[in-house]
Length: 474
Image (cartoon, rainbow, N blue to C red; front, top):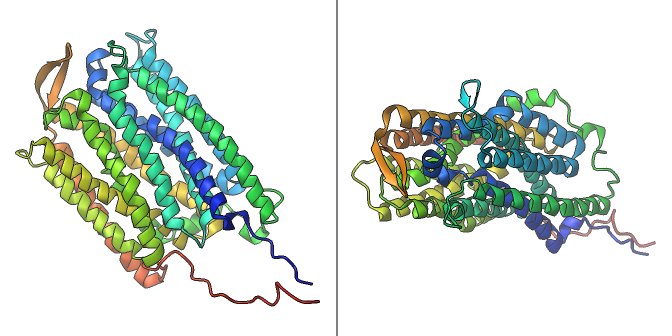
């Protein structure tokens, strides 16, 4: 008699790619809400009186709770303790709650003329809502990273992570290109309308994740796991494992590379539309479409570079190339006489290539440096470090614009707004790129020293062998 070998559900291509699609849809709606306010800077300034500094304060709120209350780290520990299903569900619910608060703040007039701790009440309440939402989206991000590893370990891991990021970037691209048209859709400018669209999308994302929970439970059952949180004692996460993670030099190089790289990209996107208006003379209604080209490039290139990493390796080298492109783009954006919109389009496209290279190699590389039982916390700690940049850099850029870069005022669509010289902010972004390049080289040297395999392919080449212990004749 021949015993039938039980296969995991993840061995089914249809099942694992369907699971990836489902969680990617949730993240896509999350990223849509994350960037929905970015193209509205001019409208916020002209319609409800937000300054560049207040706009920077709002965007910096993304990291408030994640950084100062350690919510990301707590989320990572919870993820490693109770698993992806409940953690993901809680994260999506928190996203919806924070987005609802953000929408109320920018849609109500009851906060007009009031202050909280010396800050415009509308700005403060919207910021708190954004901070709550950020806890949800960041914990959802580390959860989805662990979900992808769960379904794709030993398979097309980098490609899967690249495709998930590509789907998320669709949300960013649509937000950047469609936010202003949505705000003006009825002929009456309403900056709260795009936020409402984002809130509706998040509700859809919550429903979709509940569908994934059913699939995840079936995966565990196919592998003989009766409870998601039941694992072997030696594989259980322990708080002392945090010390193991933060004493790993390779982990630190990736974490610092992450915060530097993302600090030069995501805050740039927040101010990108305003840059296009002020330096390149693009109309406000079209300005968001140029920064939107960056995530659209991700949609195609991140999976491509992920496939290269899966099959050919060279993860550390990929990150070095991406950092070099980052420096070139921001340095050219800082050149005063380069003001042709075609130049802006080309530079954004090149930045999109760099932005595709680094994440496609960076996140799969974490799985080679950190054991699986610590992955949730390792990702959470990296995201926590990253959030220092996502919190501090938008505030810094907003402050620099108000302090040093105002060049005058102009009337657009009946609204009086300031005009800005973006040379100094672009130089700051280029500086982050230079530091990112340094740490990319340090990571490559550490990999050569410790043998993590960052330059090796991800896909395991399995020999066709008959396993006598699994199949026996009786």
